[in-house]
Length: 383
View 1 (cartoon, rainbow, N blue to C red):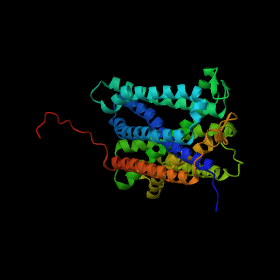
View 2 (view 1 turned 120 degrees about the vertical axis):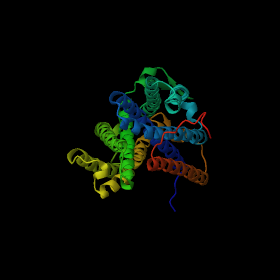
View 3 (view 1 turned 90 degrees about the vertical axis):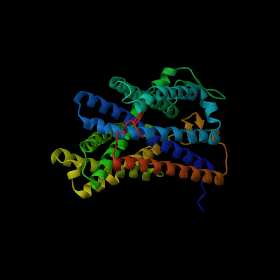
View 4 (view 1 turned 45 degrees about the horizontal axis):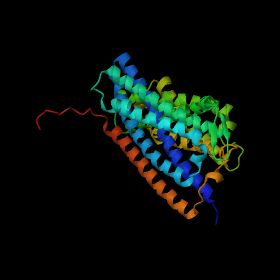
């Protein structure tokens, strides 16, 4: 029987939670800026199709935000149970960054997200658009802080290692780490492809069911542009800093994952090429394309999720067997648990995450099936 070490099981359990969170953070990041673009374009043109797209995708943004917050809890539990010594060793770096991220999250939620999600129509449109802008900036700032921590863990600088922990002597070196720009490009790539294919896929799925509205056709075109943007962002780090950010391609244990990423990107590029051909060369909306192409697009709706998971694994396991490259080994901070306990807990986490993902997808298609119907105010009306 194949023996798998408890340390490897713990790594995969932790990565599973981190990867699941990354998917919804990617959706949250991309949708925040896309919603701002929709609001600004609606202000400029006055065309209702833009605000129609906004009404649907702001619900996806809210769902992604709820899931992201919910998944953070088991992730923190895993840090405490699997890697209890980790926070003590990197508290000098992770502590201030995590505290600032939490403060930004609470401020963003209480002030800006609250206005963005629950007070549209109750405040001036200019103030509501400002809330959308600040929400997108807040999410971006939190992601930037997490990228700074990840970059430092991959290539420590601005710190000194002592017997008990890492001491910071230069915060500028951490906050302006040379890898952050490349990792931010990866975030642009993953989030653009993730949300872009969701937008294209759901419009294609709607086209199979009924004629599309102007807003739904517009949503497909916006999704295609986002996917093309994401693909462009993926090219640069993939070619120029592959050896610094990812597990080497020649690594025999990870070559199959690399081929999986290449195959998935090829399939996604086929959808983007077909969409570009029909929309811009043939001048057809998605509802007037062949049925086989609509089905192909709808099948690829969540392909961006898989891409984020695969590239996340290649990035996370780049440091193995270190948690902080060259400074702190995984074995130093791992709490030795039995393989049996880790298998059971991993299955429990998997069941929870599958239930959350299924609920998200069900609500995603529920809104797509019936559309977004504004709720009429009934306060003071006769029952």
